[in-house]
Length: 538
Image (cartoon, rainbow, N blue to C red; front, side, top):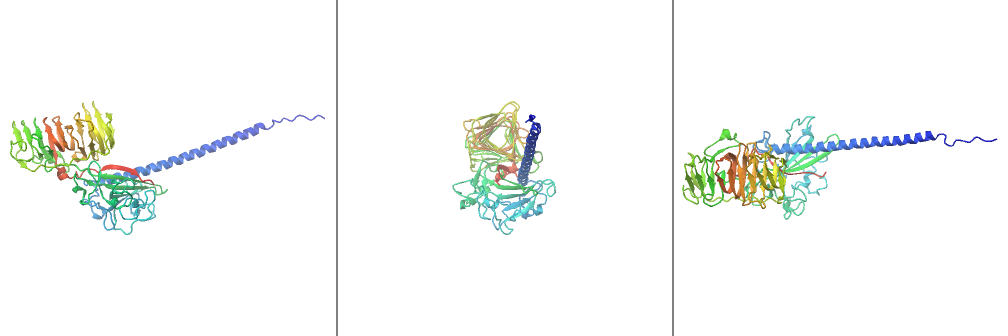
């Protein structure tokens, strides 16, 4: 009998279907795993960003509160009680003073204790910052110990919105302390005196002179005693923690008040010894006011708009008038080169005098270091602190500067272009002027500083070039250029102070001296400049 042939392909469709089903299932599982991984990555990234911004928010709260005029200032003596304040004269932390202040935040500030070891809130960055409280550790190693006792720190609580509630920002604390030479490991202010972390030269306090960080001389006990005058650099360390997952982010910032320079009682001063070093013509006038006492309209004075010169002052044409004293080496009116020349009805308003004083020595501000580039930058709409070349504005463009320090080669305004600052906060511009005959030309539409505080806008220039400044209804600023020739143009208003080799106001600009700047004191309402910010590596 012949056997029937067997179909060898029977069931192949079922096998194929099962194989395809297995393949599709594997793809589906892979897609699910990929989606879950991406979800986890996104969640981790969101958490990391949330903590990063929270830590930076802590920095900004403290930076604002370090202004003496803040409603919740941390600065003594306006801050009370003393145990919750930064000392009026900065002190270096030690075991016998309150050189460190913690500002506690989060949902439950009372439970945050950065001075206690082995908690999620422990300040395990302190041993890197060189304050002599604990043994210095390598920057990539967590601090395993905290100082003993409680005399080395003080504490207060956050005033941020919703602080102390479940809706609080997750920054837990911000540490405020005076920066030392070796506080930023591997990046000392002066590597010669601080060759390695923990060396003796690393414990020198750091000051800010408006252009760069400098070390406090051993002969001084305060930055304000330096020449040029300076202010303490505060090191702000902020930590944000997710109390559920234990994730954390730590950032550090260096902040300091800008130190405006004002010479004696003369808000506008010419350092040159030449005849006619200071010229006022065309109806130019001076007076004084206090930005910290209520502003120009409320505090205007016709006896505080002092001017001066190491040479002579030339006044010409009515109604050119000086609403303050005139300080010159020789009080004789009409004598040159060291007196006052009056012509055409110009002169001093009643109650003011010509006062003889010795020639005044004005310190030259430091040259920006490192030097900025010399490349051109046309019509930027906004800038953040940094190094820039030759900035040129034309037409109706407006440049907005965020608070901070700018190292610029030159800046020029033309047409109706303007430059303005974005309050709150202070803007300091350090000019290099490489290859520029007129490195500062703020004509055009002029300067706009809506804060009404002259100390919030400062220009430093060490060179011998020319500067042109147009006034305006909100032209508040401080000009520190003792070797340059300065010309006020436009016949408007300038509020603040200025020091230059020669000063010319021939177009009738009204000069208003902000007396808050007297004796090299920084405007108390000014916010501290953020000199630098960085993330701590762990």
